[in-house]
Length: 178
Image 1 (cartoon, helix red, strand yellow):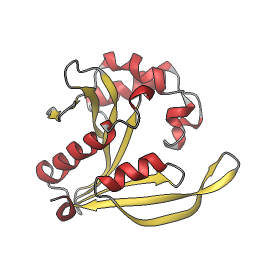
Image 2: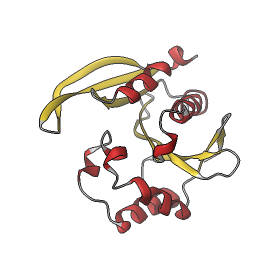
Image 3: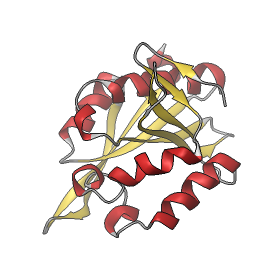
């Protein structure tokens, strides 16, 4: 995949040398708290290595990028496109900023805007969607600022810290991006 170049970041390919940076957050509840259920259990080094190897070797339907610093290409996080529906021109986005000191500084927003441009202008997708837990205010605000619109809720879909919470589906269409 090509590198996607932004003002402060580059979305680049996965590399095996990204594993140590991924290992720093993959079992950190402060980061994984709002991610998918696969992070409900500890992730072994082998889990991380297997995931990165599958991305490097292209042995997965997920297509993704490392979010890296523009000057050094150092790891910041990941942004992936998955659940492609080529007939209907749709995909799902997943994103994580894996360095706590960089949370809330606009790196996720910049990465989302780059992936939107790539998805709509290069891949000719019509729709991008994502899911966000109702308690993830920072994520929700970021997605909304990038043009995603709330289109539905799965009520009490997530069991989180002793209570059931909603899962929100958000999407953006190509003409809304343009």
